[in-house]
Length: 208
Ligand code: PRP
Ligand code: URA
Image 1 (tube, helix red, strand yellow):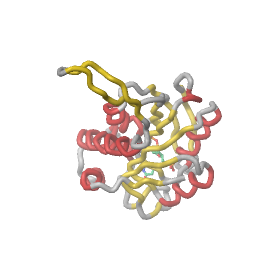
Image 2 (cartoon, helix red, strand yellow; image 1 turned 135 degrees about the vertical axis):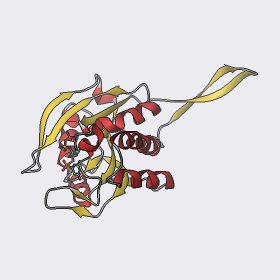
Image 3 (cartoon, protein in one colour; image 1 turned 90 degrees about the vertical axis):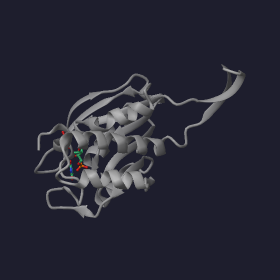
Image 4 (cartoon, protein in one colour; image 1 turned 30 degrees about the vertical axis):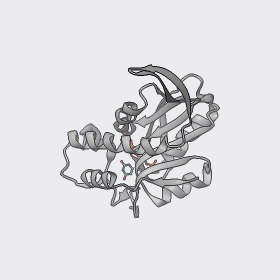
């Protein structure tokens, strides 16, 4: 598994806004989607294109179109919804597969409560969306769900990751690539990423 830290001044600047505790809910939402656009730009760099000819204003012109990629994005409820609009801005035709998980606050284990996947998931690239990769439990559970349904091409977009979570995902699903704005220092005793952003779901939904 490869971890791609998208190290770009715009990403670093925007992540700084998210880390600030006084950032408002509306700004947190819009900046999360802005970073999502930058992460998906990196995550789609390997897409192949095919040339074809269209009628341009000055006659026929050769152009390129993305070929052979059927995409489903997989927001993990609820915080993953906070990255969805940014990704859909770039891939408007993507089908949406929704997985509902929450972390049991004591065991930190993910509890599944919903899964509605796109049709033909086995032939799609699944792009999982979740702002936080902490212990890795939620991401591993989502990849398990996708693989059980035959999905073979999976990557993950996360705003912030903990090294502990990356190691767990890497051990269980070495084929899954992660695109992130930052790999932070560590998890605290409650499974929160330090320095992190706090509770991403609460900050996106205004339930802090
Ligand atoms: C948060 C976050 C991830 C998960 C990460 O969700 O959005 O889904 O925790 O933690 P993990 O890597 O240790 O599994 P949470 O359970 O708080 O639910 P929410 O999105 O509904 O707020
Ligand atoms: N979930 C969050 O929202 N934040 C963390 O730091 C860890 C899990």
